Image 1 (cartoon, rainbow, N blue to C red):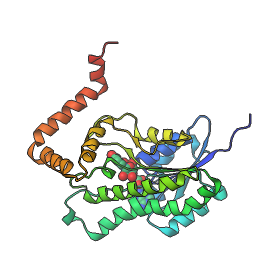
Image 2 (image 1 turned 120 degrees about the horizontal axis):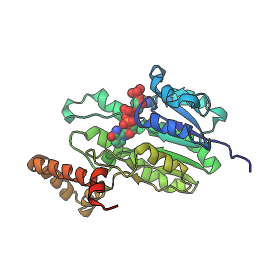
Image 3 (image 1 turned 180 degrees about the horizontal axis):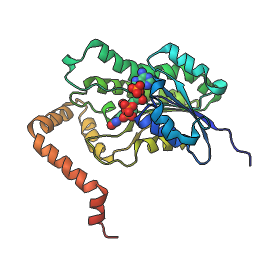
Image 4 (image 1 turned 45 degrees about the vertical axis):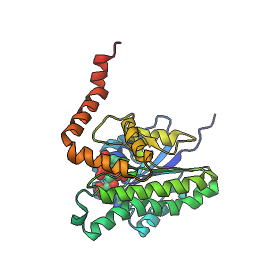
Length: 275
Ligand SMILES: NC(=O)c1ccc[n+]([C@@H]2O[C@H](COP(=O)([O-])OP(=O)(O)OC[C@H]3O[C@@H](n4cnc5c(N)ncnc54)[C@H](OP(=O)(O)O)[C@@H]3O)[C@@H](O)[C@H]2O)c1
């Protein structure tokens, strides 16, 4: 049987973290199903990716410059894509901002939105015409728990991820008509609690799935908190509960999280579950 052509996957923000890990996982696919365009805004930071990519570099993995905050950079990057075709885009590039809102400068706030929101928009607008034309494509967006639940002192970051969630939910409906999947919400990192799946693997699983779910929550312990949010449409229940948890019951909250971590960690499970 003839080998199907590799799908071209463009990943943003590959100089470190999740982007780097996803790019390498895909490039090392034993069935060579992907040509990975691992992009980063500053090529002088390519050392870690090159080291992790090993023999895949120049074979199933190519490194390209891309700053998602620049229209010109997006156009230049896409002009270098072999055949101009991108089957999958993984919007991973992101920046955070922690602290009281009053201490954040205008340019800092702008930068968060320009990267986390407009970066996704720029690539979507550039790639949707070809994906709709082919009636196939995957647009993966790395979101956050903070895209569904505001978290104290993460106001701007949370607002940016909420914006991305809204964008994804709206687009997903019409894109299904074109067999293009817009995939929001890869959530993790909630107070260090254990995950169902490491985020890079969760992203690869989404890309491999012909009909992926709209969201991939990687932290099941987050579901009860989300339920609290939707249980009261006026929003009071969630806001007041979080305030009490953080400011009135801080030590109890920490203790409960510690207990949850303990109960859900592997070593504990081994101890309490007979094999
Ligand atoms: N870590 C977590 O717990 C967590 C939880 C939920 C969601 N997320 C999301 O996961 C994604 C990846 O985060 P991470 O944890 O892997 O963080 P990370 O290691 O800091 O990676 C972020 C990447 O984004 C790149 N980037 C920043 N601005 C860019 C721009 N203008 N153009 C292109 N690339 C840019 C960074 O490049 P430089 O090296 O040039 O700065 C870096 O490669 C983000 O979207 C983040 O919001 C993370």
